[in-house]
Image (tube, rainbow, N blue to C red):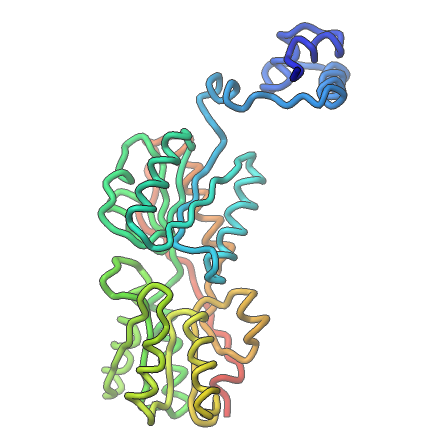
Length: 324
């Protein structure tokens, strides 16, 4: 039979009320008494009932995370920081991998609300999901416009796209292509494409973009088939850039002598396995910190005014893929 609060009180030699106050950190309790209660809990292998505690405090100390995938290095690193930050503030996370599917995203959103999470941080792909607009649910988007009312945190995508394209031009590239995700998605990341097109037009160069659908990189083969004389490629994330590097190697195309390449994200994983890749580095930890900060602000007071959009600076990291 599992031990209960009465058992803890008996072993500690205190009242049940005192045990409850220790567990809920209410009122003054001497360090001696607090230690006696914790020692009794440890001896009995007793764990407080989080459900009961949440009913008392009206908080579950749970945060939901909804992202399209955990396999992408950017999302993996971002989720790592989000979980660490949440834990440091006393929150646990429920991680939901939507795989870019609207039905899964809706199902996870409903599940999180049934579990009474205190708030949600979402970077999922789908639009127009009305459940996000609940006036009682604190939500923050990362690189995704979830609704007009929900704050979104992202890197300075336009500046990053500009830096990447200008670097390729400075290196002598004239036939420069861009690869990004579906333009139909309403996301700040589309500004990378907009910046690429603006820089190319300003320099009197023709712009052309290939779109990668969810985890379908076959378009990269098509790009090389249709553009054998391509000089430079700006990929909207480092994973796409890695596929470009593989395809170029398979075709005997030397990077950077025959083709120069710039990615976007700058995760620790890609910088470890592809140290030669020039990339625009996102401040991933700072993005996580700002998202958690905005969420906590809303969770403490839904009436608190928070900025609808927060943009954080990026930096260009040049490596061998653009040098010759």
